[in-house]
Image 1 (cartoon, helix red, strand yellow):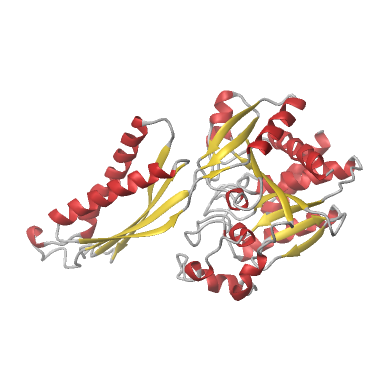
Image 2: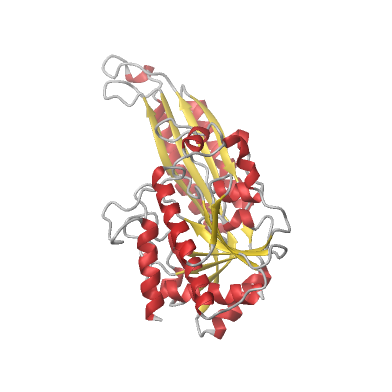
Length: 414
């Protein structure tokens, strides 16, 4: 098995476009950029070396197909190759490499599937660039609202549609990436856990039951910009002062809800835009971005209601106004119980310890599961760190996950 570990490590470096995974600044390979495209090209090269047919769909997703029968259905696996700003090189990439390695295992043992096996490297999974995630898998699943997201901008004011076009793709055709119901039969994804439950429990494989999809808000507080040196304190309409208590309130309200029930709710004030952001000018407008997640939608909505009431109280006491814009309000996703059972049995067959858990992070599989039976497995990541240069997964753990995927593909493609 050392040969497979070496192969996995080599291909992980290739997908990440580096000679060492130790990168002090991490990886910044945002969706629909030249960096993502370069990684996708390496995916194609590796796939072609395995004898797979490769192509790009209308959403920029990369496909590698082990085609054995044009009339047969597809069993698919995969993940994504884009990253957040200064992120890690295992989030997404580990799942892509594990899928490639699983196919290599099957080919090395001369396995002959009766169904076609597809590997997908999804485009623009992360929300880091446009504040909307999983563009590629939404397009495949028919869940993309093309008109709504076209004007979403990155930090440089580049819209999603413009970035897509610059990437060499046709925005008007993006929905052509949608698959027919009978084309795909099942999908399975491997991912690093991005938490520490596996590591703390000593378990080797996590089998995911449910995915906590996000509710994301932009809350704008509008006051009035004025001179910091000449405006009396009692005449100010300082938007930053007015909105500041909301940040603490969101943390406290989330903790309070968690104390009342067992299912986890998390909320983060993760972005702040302060205008005009000048030392000599009173902030006239502040926009905060809030990310709320749970596997129970009603918990997310309870927090949003609390936020609404708190904002109304601020408006009553401060000379400012608030607007709340919901960017995303996605329903949590339950994954296929039958696939979970199959994965558990595979782990038992190989003597791998496993546990059922939920995912606090979103993944492409959550969109795919709206149309087809889907499964998600986790492997441990060191100290639960993710979206950070210190993100790390052991090659031995990646090999264990690869073996599970290979066995699953074998069972379902016969």
